[in-house]
Amino acid sequence: MPKLLIYIVIIVPAVLIGLGIAVYTFQEKLIFYPEKLSDKYQFHFEDDFEEFNVVTPDGESLNTLLFKVKDPKGVVFYHHGNAGNLEGWGARAVDFTSRGYDVLMYDYRGFGKSTGKIKNEKMLYGDALLIYKKLLYDYKERDVILYGTSLGTGIAAKLAHENHPRMLVLETPYFNFYDVSKFHYPYLPNSILLHYQFRTDKLLPDLEMPVYLFHGTEDETIPYHSSVRLEQLSGKVKLFTIEEGSHSNLNTFHVYHEKLDEILQ
Image (tube, rainbow, N blue to C red; front, side, top):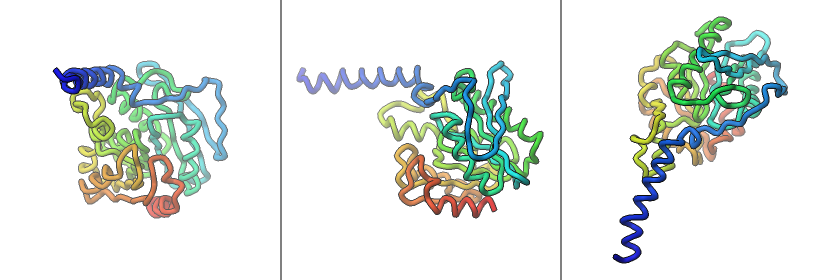
């Protein structure tokens, strides 16, 4: 048998099978990139903030920051991406405090000072809902804006679907998680391998509140076309295109702030 044929028939399938097994077994390590912080770490931000922990029913602790302004117009409940921790993500709070809103951020399990490990999609939703319910002790639901970035867009969309916030804002959202995995790993049977679905495409058509999307045309992590397809699902969804924007720099563009002013005024 020619060497090229052996390579095609035996080696390539073996490599793909091995890669598939690795993806199935270790997908949390492929999806989440947490950076831990000591529980004694002191945050420093220009905005005033309070730090507290929310204890989950299974005894884990979710580290949370509440950035405060005088006479807030409402509160932005912010769900960050799949890497880093609040030390870095906290810098985004000024995008909303400068517009008169309090901002609540939290680290997922295993990120920053939060304890535990992410084991499934249901756990992520449960933790977000737990914090959302606590938020409603201090804010009327009509004053809550749900904001998600990258990974956090699926979590924010699920919360919006199960509750009644004022609006939902998604920055660099995916159509669903299968769609993203297919973009990065086109030769794997992702529908079989993935534990995580994040079916944003199934949730948005049911929403009654306004939904706003921000996406850059040069995004190489979650393709811009994901948001184009999401906008087509419902008349409630409005896409703001950031020309030449990539995955992590949209708030450096004037048009981002222009549109944020428009929806948050």
